[in-house]
View 1 (cartoon, helix red, strand yellow):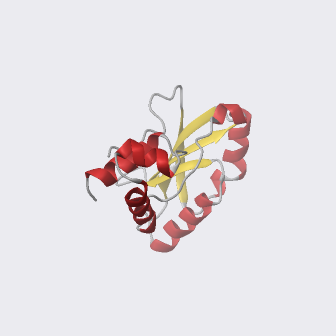
View 2: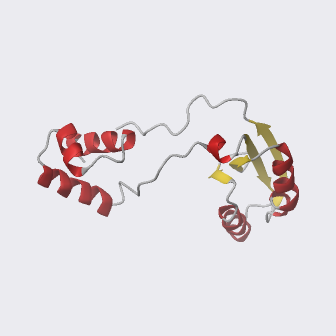
Length: 150
């Protein structure tokens, strides 16, 4: 990966809907070499996809919590079962396995506190292998969906 590839990535992270011609102009390449580089970045999965960044509040998802999960045990089968179950919950925007205690961090959005309580009681509390969960409510987004440094 060279400076031109990094520039392509930086431009696309900011404006993913550019046409190939517009992208080529922005990175100072002709269209054909720009297209080859873009296809190679996609082929190697450096670019993993394209999507719209949607305002969660516009969808009525105004409540956000960070949930710290501590597991009862950390054997392979329990961790795999937990991780597979978490991937099936649409309200989980982020799930990260951590070193130390707690074992996992989940970023969860719901419509409101009542919807979160329902999710907690009916789904989260039934996840495999969980010893305890601690929730912290998000007051304000300061940095979110920032492009990666190129």
